[in-house]
Image (tube, rainbow, N blue to C red; front, side, top):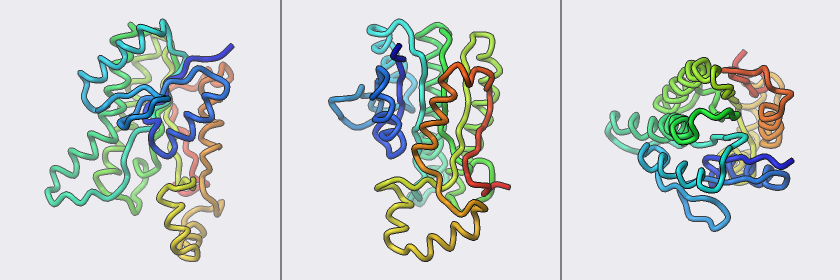
Length: 232
């Protein structure tokens, strides 16, 4: 039987990949900022009011959701001169988009059992060459999700985190960096990643499938790291 799955952030690089892979076998609804006739649109996921309205519209056509995969976030360097604004922008993109989605689902679907998967980053776990505001917002996100998972357990809502390392996918940051200077990029990977490789989007997709499936029914509040050993 096909599952009803919502992919939040389906316009982003990883979100689009997961959306396209999942829609082949499931009934998948995408939520993103930009207009696309094949997906459901939400202008600003960090706006709790708009998020509530989004889930109200989803509920009109779906009495239940089997899984929610949340892939929102921005890791690019913020050129804002004001430090406060940098942190506000990052928390809006990397924290509020996820927390508002989870809270809105709870409110509109009345805590119906589902599986929620949040795509985070190892930048929230280890000091790395990433913008400080991005790393801090991801660290806060991870802590929020684990606290929230404990709360949601009584409703049989499973919430887990996937923290990938360096993802290589067509047209993402690493793709263009490698295209520009392959030797420099591969030297970085060799120096920092014990398995000497990138994380592939299909590996994230397969892990999502496990967490959605009954075989992953004993995962709760887990932060599953896929980084080739980089955080060791």
